[in-house]
Image (cartoon, rainbow, N blue to C red; front, side, top):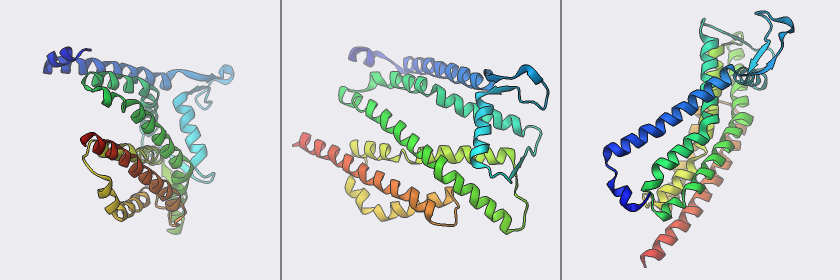
Length: 265
C-alpha cells in the first residue's frame, strides 16, 4: 500500500479492515479448536463401551499427558461438578486452538499494522516476533520442567502436613497447570517489551540500571507467588535466567540508544 493510500484511509476504513482481520482470526481459532476437540488421533473399535477410551483426540491426549507428567501416582483427581470434565476439555482445547492458529493470528496482525509502519519500523517486526516466540517457549519450558512439578510437590506436602487426604478437583488442577504454563511463558517475554520501550525512548537503560535491585526483588516475589515451593532451588533456577535476560535487554537497548544519539548529532 502506498503512502497516499495510507493517508486516505479513514476511521471506517480502518475499522472495516480490523473486522476483516478479526473475522479471519476467529475462523482460524474456531477451526483449530474444533479440530483438536473432535478429530481422532487413535481409534479402537474392538471393545466399544463407556468405560473403554476407544476414541482419542488431541485434547484428550494432552489432558492425559499433563496428568501423567505432573500428578503423583498416589494422588487422585475428582470431577467435583457434573461439568468439570467438559470445562477442562473446552479450556484445554481453546488454548491448543490458540497455539495452533497463532501463525494466522500473527500474520493478520502484521498485515493490519504493516501499512502504518515506516521502513525502519518494519525491520523490527521479524526480530520482535522471533524474540517473543523464543522467549515464550523458554518460559513455557521452564514452567513445564521446573515450576509446575515444584508447585505440585509443595501443594501435596502442605496437604499432608495438615493431615488431609491429597484429593483435588479435576478442574482446579488443570486451572493451576495451564495458568502457570501461560504465565511462565509470558513473564519471560519481558525483554522484548523492555527493548521496545528503550527503542522508542519511553525509558532509558540508566533508569533500568538504577532500579535493578527493585526489579530483582519484585521478580523474586513474583516467582514465589507462582511457585510456592518452600526451598530456594526453584526460585534460583528461575531468577538466574531472569537476571541474564534483563542484562541482555540493557545491552541491546544501549545499542539502540547509541544509534539514536548518533542520528541526532
